[in-house]
Length: 142
Image (cartoon, rainbow, N blue to C red; front, side):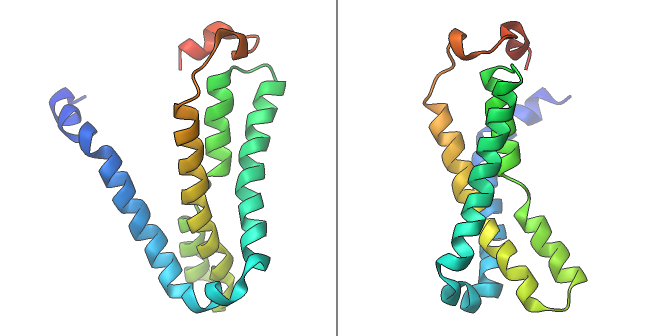
């Protein structure tokens, strides 16, 4: 579409992504900080499990269905990183009770941590032809 503009913006994309994540996480957490600090593990653990098991489930279902490694990893990231900030916004708009937003605020934090960690980890684990599943050619098109 616009190769020159894309070439200029591409190096800045990671920085823009990090800045947007910081703003979203900071806005959600700052409004719920007192409750988050007092909740402890009873609120943290279920949210962590939601994101970890979502990612693991997405990956395993793809691999069991014979999809390649790239499809499995992409699905894992997509299922682990649902938009917690959007859910927080929807809760803020549609529910008068403030406490409804608190799990969403926790989820925003863990979403960023777990999703980023998965992406960094998989960046350093190369694909191998033996892990591509039944449809070796399909992954190359993605």
